[in-house]
Image (tube, rainbow, N blue to C red; front, side):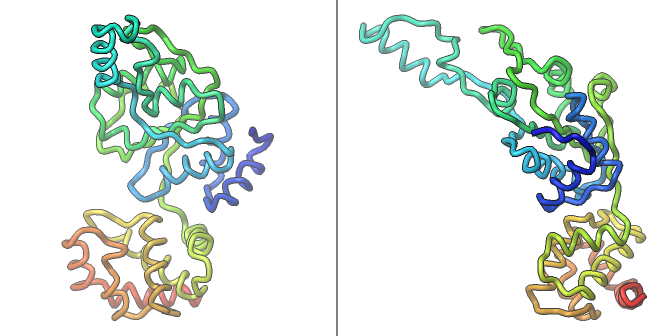
Length: 283
């Protein structure tokens, strides 16, 4: 499936419960149109991985995550023993029959539509990043014992990074680039209502406003959209209709993941943030 316009792609992503801003929609559209990998950077929890998942759903494509290939050594050993006993003939041990197709090779050698997700590449070592250059530029994998396997059908490729380290310029030159930031208040509220069906309108608005307030503090890990969604689920499960200081304190572990951040908010800013969130939701 291909999309004629950005609007068509946005509609399909919305059906997959993903609400990108126009910049991200454009980047995804161009990645498909130009058959060029897309590098998405941004803080954890802003929706980079979810973008790839939603794209696969929109394309009705198979989502494949990273790895490469390896040889099936136990099967090779059994074949050697069988050949020694005369029950099978000798064969090329490093041939296709003995190759275990890991996701990278599966994505390259697939007949059907595929979205290849190379997730959190900044956590991999630089040698692996260098290995990816052949795939991202030529859509092929070279296996010394067999040769070069070229893509039968180019997969859509999404590379994500939390920017814990800089990726090499050589890799960036082979991709389109888009930075995903935290959404604005209105779009985050829209995302929460889409991803948490039935959540009370007021509760969703207060939760989005409270998380936005948290991001303005000096925290070790500011919460992303993923945490807002998780927290809205938790609050709805408790049957809440709106925020108060008590329920926020009891559920902070759904939105903050560091003990120091939780203690700092409890000690200094919790009551103020709740009041500001409630006021924002009313306005």
